[in-house]
Amino acid sequence: MVSLALAGGLGALIWQLAGGRAIWEVLQGGSRLTGVLMVILALGLLIGFTVVFVAFHQVFFSPDTWTFRFEDTLIRLFPERFWQVAFGAVALASLVQAGLLWLASKAMIGRSA
Image 1 (tube, rainbow, N blue to C red):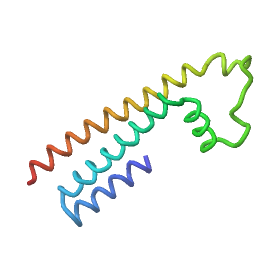
Image 2: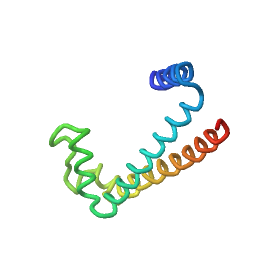
Image 3: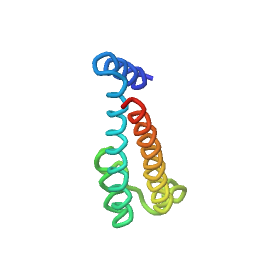
Image 4: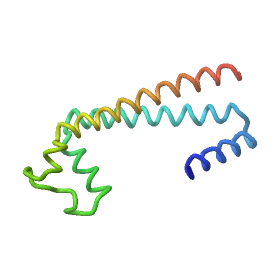
């Protein structure tokens, strides 16, 4: 909720200072950046999932708190294949959303021109 309120406040500030077109330009740039990052993530997943998986855990978890034995229940419930599909689904969903936002922002910028 706080992030949503901050984003709305920032949008209102941009609207006041630079106008509505500037908001659509910022959204278009953000969607482009998100698309590029998701393509890089997808390529990383295809080339070397283990490297991306380990790097993710090294960034977001304390050392040695995320490694388990293959016999542990958590690993049996959520094997590596599950995480490959989950990472891919998040990357694909984000890429689709970024593409839709890019198209919408492009249309809105064209309207205001």
